Image (cartoon, rainbow, N blue to C red):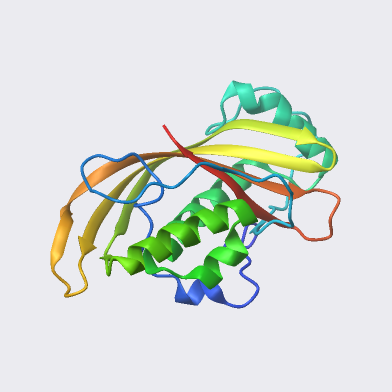
Length: 218
């Protein structure tokens, strides 16, 4: 757990997260998996990724490492509204959230996803999990590494803050049938995934957590 940017799962769900999600998120490069409909939340809910502590008092003069210039003004507006917000620490927490959500889906852990995601994203994940289970398939996936994570956009529309992060990662993906036979993918040949995730929270809420609001792929 990060001291300043820990993931709050409310019911110790972090201890149960396994490896299961490339079928829903990331660029398809040969490993056959079900697509996830793009989910954009219409109603904002309390968030799940904990906001970091230690935001500097001065304005953001230029985009820091891991932040696109296009996100600069939005991050400044969020920092002005939430004096505890820190973009660099947020990015570290977002990478942890990325791993947790991927692993929760790969495992089919609906309870964990319920705490990590907004309703629309959660419903899309559950639909994909149910379809996979109906086919008798299981995923044996592994997030090999996150090559890069960058904040590419940020907005503040009182009282909602939204931060969009692009993740470039390598994922080993394997699909098994109901008998445990491999029907697709390889654990020795990782594929590239390029995901764009948006997190949000109500900065006026006492709840310091962020939630996954939208997923897309590049």
